Image (tube, rainbow over the protein chains, first blue to last red):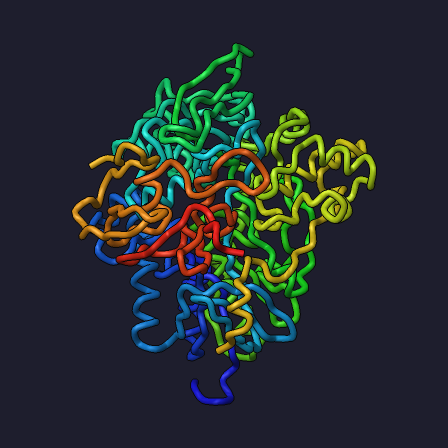
Length: 461
Length: 102
């Protein structure tokens, strides 16, 4: 089905969810437009290096290589045959009234749609650690991207800290590639990990892979860790920056591990800014401990908007493929077009969600540790706003996230709160005597959701 | 091939690519075809820029275009996000604004 009467369906994001959504729509005869920030489709987890790199998929993606190859081939085939329109290196920075604003190479363009599928993925979920503004501190995702897409380690001797599946996965990938990993510091205790075993057992092969990776790390891995701080020297000179991570072990003993790079991350935070601008409703999820968009099981968010992948529910790559197919099927059904049978995918979704909730409980966000960080800790990396400043603002202005942002700027910097808002919410909640961070409200997204050069707004295509 | 003396990053693989010349704060440096601007700078230098709101320098953080920590300058004035901009032959990159800029 082509021509002027074909419904204009736009997909934002070309990771596993966006690719499967595009494939499902194309199979039904539609020609969706896929807008993606990456130069090549694959998303972050199946990110491809630039042309000219030679490591085989088995090296880049390990046990998931077959899935990565299948996704890349499916997308490249659709794009090459003209069954989809691919806009790589395009950032969607705003949307309103059925029109997206995308920026690419310093110019902007408007893209109208009848139906919108948002598959925007996730970023690392970060918790502030004293000293984390020093050069040489990266998110765990950053370190994995650097290894996959550039073949580099972010330092000569690396400490990885935080919690979640990526912590152990990245450690084993770095070791395999020849990097030096000095310690792997998991803030999750072993007791919580064991309590989650019944949920994790619904995907036995994945659970066993995790156990095997843990075994390979041996004495590098420590559970139940408290992160005390990151030491750094004058960063203006060669060799400057991170010099060590100070931590306490599960027995409460003080430890210090020398390093020149530190990776931090606590699982994922859904990338929901565009869903917010599209008018989606949100609910605080007490398992994932963040605000997530509300949809039906298919990903329908209402008003012709559909969500899929980690930007909706943090199920990981396999869950994203399922969710992408479901969102596209819902879109087709709402258009009155025949789509695929979804019964099997709905069953898969339920199993993957049980597993993911088990992971979230086994490797939790360290809310109590965040609430206890010292006043002089930088909370907002963008503008150097400290924990003490946020506490003071909340005490003065009230325990509401958007008020604290307006009065004290936490969440107003260039990243727009992506890396500080969850920690800020904990501090604000503590200030107001509230048990759950969700009680301080949700930081509203503001367009543009990425910084845009003024030139791009002046030069519209 | 590992990082050069002043660099933060270590090359672990894919080192057979063609070499690319660029200027960093006016000095000629080398990187490899397919490097991002961030990789090119940080295999030669310990940081990308000075923080505006603190005493420390910055060297990027998320590498996926979300944190906005890695914006640097080109000599012509345009700012670029180092993690998501491919290096091009002859790029003239600055880790600080020029003193003659308003």
